[in-house]
Length: 202
Image 1 (cartoon, rainbow, N blue to C red):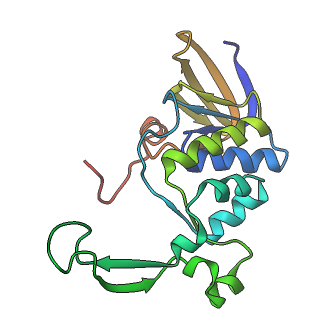
Image 2: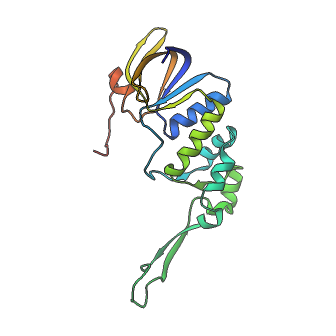
Image 3: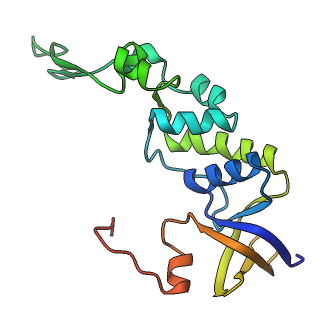
C-alpha cells in the first residue's frame, strides 16, 4: 500500500475510535482509522448508552438506527429483583423489589428535561457494527480493519506511524498532525513510553 499523509490518524476501531472517526468526518476533517483486529467486538462488553452519548450519536446521524436496534424504552423503566426465575418452590418468580433506573424509560420528568435524547441499551457486540457502517459511509476509504500499527514516532510537527496490513502483508507509513489513541492502551502508549496505572483485567 502507498504511504499516506493525513491530518488525523485514529488507532483503534472500538466505540471510541469509531465515534472519533464519525465526528471528524462530520466536521469536515480528513482522517484515517486503523484497527489491528479483523472486525468489531465479538464480546457483549458494555451496553448502556447514556443521554450524552446519544446526543453525540444524534449529531453524527447514527442515533435512529441505534434506537431501532436497542431495547424498547418501555422495557428499560426499572430493574427488578425476583425470588428465582424457575423451579418448584412456591415463591419462585415472586417480585422482591423494583427500582426505576436508566431514566425510567424516558418517562421520568428529570431525564426528559435533561436531554431530548433518551438513554438506550445496546451491547457493544451489536453497537460497534452499526458505528463501523456509519463511519464507513461518512469516510468510505478511511476505515481500515486488519491494519495494525507496529511503530509510532513523534516529532515537533506531528506523528509517523508504521502500519502493517494483514490483508496483503504489506507495510506503509501514515504521517499525521495528530494521532488519537483509541486502542485501550494496547499499542500507541507502549510505543511512546506512556504507561497506564490502576487495576487491569489481567
